[in-house]
Every structure is written in C-alpha cells, then in structure tokens.
Length: 264
Image (cartoon, rainbow, N blue to C red; front, side):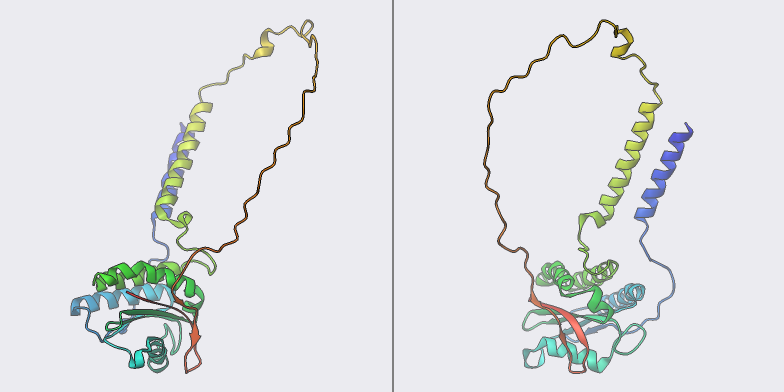
C-alpha cells in the first residue's frame, strides 16, 4: 500500500511540474511603448492590451517584442524601414540597440516582415521567424490583426525558451504530450507493482521432471538449399521544407539581424 501511495504522489508531482508555466513570475514590469500602430489597425483597448502583453512576455526573455504597422513603406522597402526604425528608435530590453524582435506590417502592399536583433537574432533565427510568420499569416489574411499580434508575442516568447538549433515545434516539447507521457509512465509503474504484489508462481516444468530419465533421444540436421534475395536500396536525392524570403542582414547603423518576409 505504501508503494502505491508513493507512486501516486510521484505521478501528481510530475503532472503539476509539467503543467506549471516555466519562468512565469508575478513581478511588476516597467511599461514602455512597444506597439507602433501607424496604420491604425487596432482599437485603443487592443493596443493597450497588446502593449502590456509585449512588456510582460518580453521581460521574461530580456527582449523587446515590438509591433510596427504602416499603411505604406518608403520606396516599398519594408526591410529598410524596419532597420531604420531600429537604428533611430534604438529599442532594447535594458539598453539602447539591445535585444529586440520587430514585426513590421505594411497594409497597402500586404507585406509582413520580421527581424531579430542580438539575443533575438540568436534565439529567433530566420528559420524560427519563418515559423512565426507562417503561424500568424492566416489571422492577418482574415483581418484578425489583434489575434495575429497576440500569437506573434506568445510564439516569440515560447520559441526563445529553446536553445538555438532545436525545433521548438517538436511534439516532445508539447505540454499535453508531456502530461500524457507522465500519466502513462505512472500507470505502468502502478501496473507493475500490482502484478508483483499478487505473489509469484513457484511451479515450473522442472517440478515434475525426472532428470535421470530425461534427455535428447536423437538429433539430425539436413541441408536443403541456400536462397539469396536482392533488394534495391532507395536513396533520397531531394531536399525538403520551404520558407519565406529572408536570411538576415545588417542595418545602416551596423546592427546585424535575422529576418523573414512574406505576403498576407
């Protein structure tokens, strides 16, 4: 009975540990403007809610999570517009020109562009920015800008919790998969203990076997034939996966960044 209680207690601990959000604290966060909605896509209430969210999530990753919208980009160059914004506004979590990720949306040309600087360049490389852009594009296309921006903030925050080079969308990192795994492991442990607690069977074939009269009567091997089978091994000669344009760059102020661009 004590073993059963110990296993149940361990199972409950695993469930609570996995379900608890990592690094989420109630500490007060200094609010600063991170939502620059020049295209006026959001209501005042939506801007305020997103600004609070961007400050709170960004503080946990020590990175400014910024949204910049415009009706049009000068010379249709949204990348240069984003770089100039970083150079001139000088965002950064704890210093000017510091850690920042910027989402730029140009309404007239239907362009969406993302850039990551310093820590965000490392933890939100161009591949991860492609993933974020692909996740929010359906909401942008349907005009659900507030929903898309919220998803951008939360996804950028979550992705920065993984070491570079790791696929943050791997099912092994999914919280429900982890909870299911904890339940299965606990269930197996309980089942094994229940099986063992039922007693052992001590009777086997040797119980009634007379070793003095038992033995091999006869043995014979016959060779019939040898058969050889050939199988062609297929080789994968093509690549997989696709992404938007990007790859990174350097602003006029000399700040390198990752990037991803596409239409919505």
